[in-house]
Length: 324
Picture 1 (cartoon, rainbow, N blue to C red):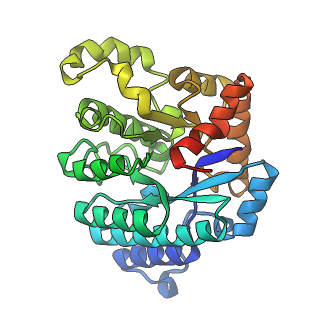
Picture 2 (cartoon, rainbow, N blue to C red):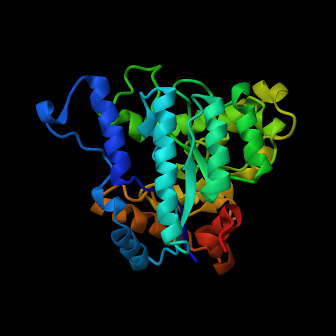
């Protein structure tokens, strides 16, 4: 079994909701200013196209979630509504193909009460298998005590939390004209999010909280030595050895291809029990199929023993997402 833990689905109806809100914010109209197209490829919403891609590459199950940078710039109320619509739309697809898709519910933490209400709805009515949140909440770190009730509920229901990188504002040179934010700023934001969860005390308070990092651990694997060198200065913030905090932190394989050594670096950091296949489908060339192939090839390049490869491709995800 191969499980893709990090891919995306955005329905046509949701795209319309998002674009309408963006047009309204900018004081424009499609009639006056022409169409404005959402970045998600239109093929993503066609289940037959999606299933055909899965069949071509022997993908058994996809975990469907929203791209969380979609919420950037929206108010708390708008972001909550987008998440509600995304979660409901994903559930419709998951219910239609229960053996092929599982629902990863998007939650905005801009309004914590609204977030908790939506999490309850997802758990009770939408067969939620995991949640996805943005790596910062419009500039607010994930170690804020305001979010503790949310983490507490995740732990109580044994739901993993996927971290999806998003934009940040503190450094004006990190703009998208040269694609600096999405290429380099996002992995940085994933890194700071997990750093804060560890050193901000969240994982001491909720030691069984399960976290899935996008892009195979972002900066952590490559800078593991540099991190170790600086740990003595922060030792008073930790209640146990730094390595102990990683027992419930996982990395997906969504590096979009690249040298085999990049996958080897991530694998060396996480190990066979904490790496999972993720593609970022349907983004990328060939309406996302290039990344499906490239990330599979990256994992295959590791030449793991069969039992370890089985874990990485599907067994780890089966356990976390409760896939039969």
